[in-house]
Length: 290
Image (tube, rainbow, N blue to C red; front, top):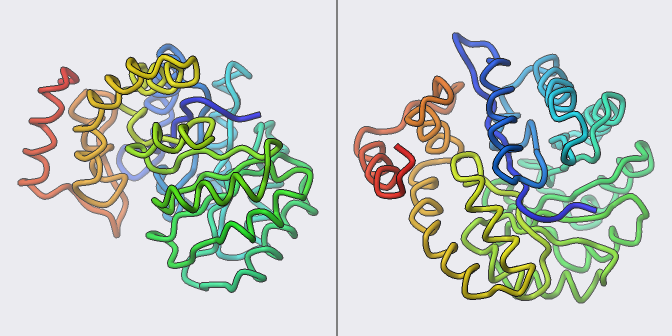
């Protein structure tokens, strides 16, 4: 259902408010360059500091702008199950094609708690759901056995797997079978993960280099392994540079360098340190983006 290069969109701000004009332009930039799906209001979209009203508006605006040209997978995760249900219901109401649901952060639920959390959302909202496992940001690792239990639920269709472990990816694929889709949550691991069965990536890098990300994923899927590897090698400096500091600080800074957004962040995220910014600018220049 969901595959290819799917962008985890930034949320552009101007003077403290969501910049809808810039957001619309970013969406069109993605669609013109081969991106296979859009994720608004994920962690790259600074969902943690959006008000509920802003969150709902960004999702609705994205759906309205995309106009069914590619799937829209709305970020709808929370460390409150009730809140995640409410955000997922809104995503369905405005016409999103799916919802991306991060594992509850800070609470550190046990595996049974994770299972019940996602089961409750799936039962409450009939919408395709994508699990999101990223232990480095949430302090909880959803184990393959738990993913396997959840994959048996009809509308839980995929996982964005960001553990960084290829063994864990393989175990998920073994546990879930062909009905369930694994997507990379680590841009530099996209090709290795596809080699063991993943179907694409939910990517930060596509915010600034959508055509190359889409081409890399498409090349691997078509069996053009040398081309996919060459694109991976080309993109690798960006993969590294976009995590010089906490995501999405570098990618918003990069988009600002490209003249696409103001680069404004919300506290507790703040402007990129000058040394990191200079390193990022060098990589961007070498890549030809600025």
